[in-house]
Amino acid sequence: MKALSAALRTEESFGAGHLIDILTGTETDKTRARRHHELPTWAVGQDLSRREWQAVFRQMMGLDLVRPDPARHGALRVTEKAHPVLRGVENVILRRDTIQASRSRPAVKMMVSEEDAPLLSALKAKRRALAEAARVPAYVVFTDRTLIEMAEARPTTLDELARISGVGAKKLETYGRTFLETIAGAAAPEVHPARRKLAGREAGAVYDRLQEAAVALARGEDGTQKPLSLTPSALRHVAERRPGSTGELARLPGMDEARADRFGPAFLAILAEA
Image (cartoon, rainbow, N blue to C red; front, side):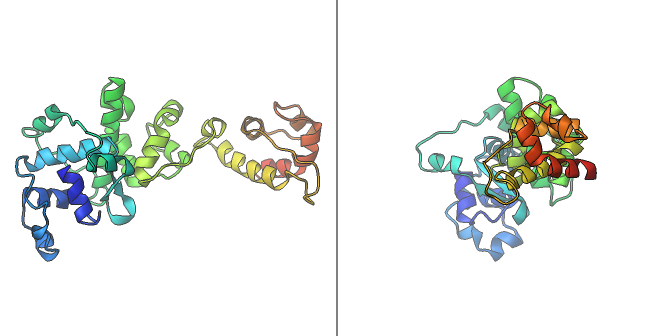
């Protein structure tokens, strides 16, 4: 694709605006200073208007062919998913009605700072792709207000994402990891469902501390005892129910007397601090 080629030939160092200048042959101080008018992709996209190219890039971000790099002010990175397309092994079909509709659509009022605008565009593209796949209106996934807050706050964990207004438990479970990947520009780490249910809650931080203690004490304080482990679900019960004694701890699901003896003192100390 012309757009992917333009991104690669400029070393994935620019956002959609500059790439569109190249594709449409629009001379600017930046294109002249970098001699981008000498690139093979210069002016190869004059068959589309600037707004139409913006629609193309939004769809490409929604299909995860390119991702804005927050560390490089929104410069578009070509993903692994796009390489088969570049080689001609796979084809990508963009929605022509969306591109054509952009011809008459009025310019959208700037809702975020210039620095956050590329990320907001990527988030909206991802929302559109998910909404179309589910055959629901885009706002059912997330509202504009929620996406704006994401673009400005740039959460990197499920706990941080859960604090964004409009991100409830169900949407966090359904869409959380996908939007974190869009924000971070990389695959988000897998989180066990038991931990995801605690995202954004005080119990989530307690769970993390309990998990660290459980790993450290797996073979006892001296490291020579019989290995014992705890399931994520057991840790969740401890974090939520907050037992006050080793006896109460032993009665929780996933626990027993041996585990209460091994982990009890450390767990109770963590719960007391929390």
